[in-house]
Image (cartoon, rainbow, N blue to C red; front, top):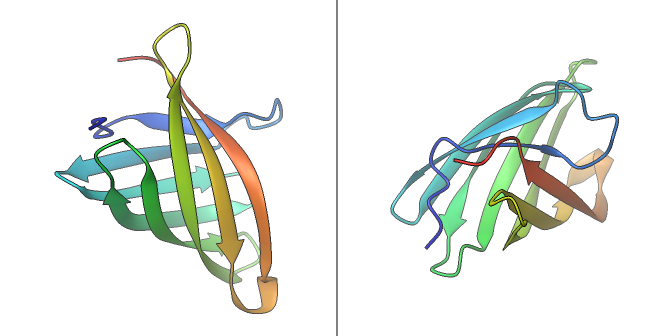
Length: 110
């Protein structure tokens, strides 16, 4: 199992400056916080499978005050420098309903 506790991730896009998520883990329980971009604050809670795959729910408060929630599944892979890359498949609910994919990169290797 990958130990995500204390690892920091950012979106892979070049314009992701300032957008960072910090993950915490205890056994298979995963949680985290993120901010930056249009997100004033976000939180996630879920589980980590033995192979490192993540399944979690998330909520975000935007700069506009709107609240978004959804779910995500992330598949890890390792980059040549030892950092983790997370390929995500996500779904948003409610008035912001959407589906998509994204990629996160670990900010620095352990």
